[in-house]
Length: 346
Image 1 (cartoon, rainbow, N blue to C red):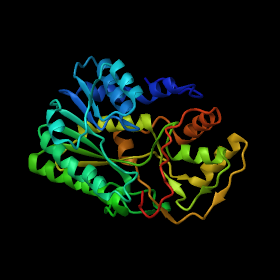
Image 2 (cartoon, rainbow, N blue to C red):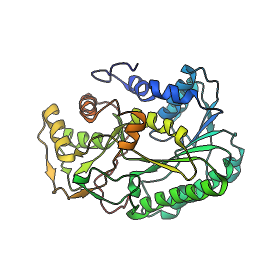
Image 3 (cartoon, one colour):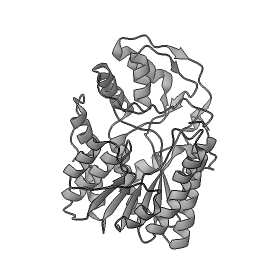
Image 4 (cartoon, rainbow, N blue to C red):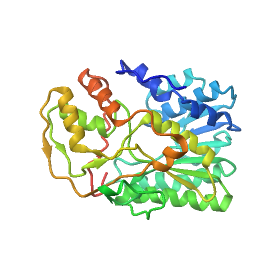
């Protein structure tokens, strides 16, 4: 049974523990994994806690599979936390073909590598990371099972009243970043068919914790008394710990052709209402700019909820935690989501 959620999050250590604590469902799913697990691109915003959750679940399940975390790892604190859990850290530039070929074999691959911000003006690197590299990884791990992160940006905007794009909807990305992410999916589709690789495509729509995410962006603007743009007036968010848990469980659903899954929260949130909620908690006046468009980049996460259960942390709880964290001066990753962008230029 899962433990009750705290009223607030005191510090980074408690936050990291919450984000990497496996649910009972994750432990049960991970107990059935045969073979080692390698996480490619483990050094990003989400990778360290997902990798630690996998190792903690394996330990609780008395599964002795090895866990590898692969990234360039610019942040040493992440490395220390991973190694403290018994995870084998490998520093590697995945675009270095010789280094990729030297990576250890693993029956299970979580693919998290990718590039978003800075895509405009450096489109070549974006396409290399998001399209060329997946092909190389499929060739290297053609005998493995792969859960590959994608994004809700592969969909077009959808009318707000519709409840978000479904996995079977047509894909119509906007801008180089989103198009390259669709390219990534197509590459995994091709090699899944060519090599019979079981693949799951994780279309994540806005993971959020207390140091980054759409709700953090809004909270920081309200606290600093900066205007909040509501042109992209609606959003999905999902607590990063819940997104970690769902992503790990997709390994059991990997298939050929690939199995796509939206990983998104159950609510369609109003940017305006979220800003007003933060303003009320913070004792601030909210400043709104723009008017809500009738459509937005929204994903329907109901399939994932049916398979794995609804997220434990809902948006209302996140708003409480984030407001408290921002007002206390809690650390930030300093990586805004640019959720308000509507032209696909990141």
